Image 1 (spheres, rainbow, N blue to C red):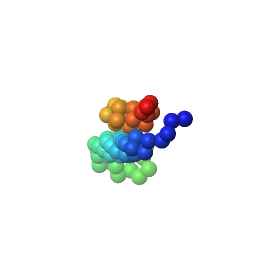
Image 2 (image 1 turned 120 degrees about the vertical axis):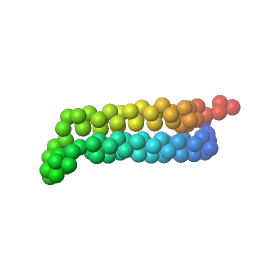
Image 3 (image 1 turned 90 degrees about the horizontal axis):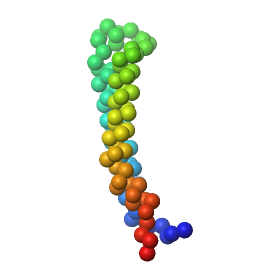
Image 4 (image 1 turned 135 degrees about the horizontal axis):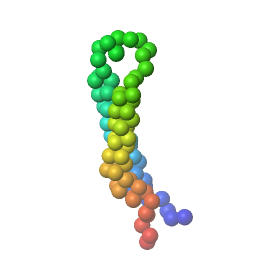
Length: 87
């Protein structure tokens, strides 16, 4: 087992933290946008289920946020934590 390089572990930790935070903010932004696009009559009914269009918008927002954050941060996080210096 190779020795632990704390620098690589710190980069991986902070990269995961920033990537997860970015994902959460983007996904919640999409969800709030979908809810805000509903009419006042739909919002007035307490306990009413969301319609299909709103659910699809929220699902696509979460999916695209996940793809964007994973594509942005995968190189700096996983490449450094998996491939340690061989020497």
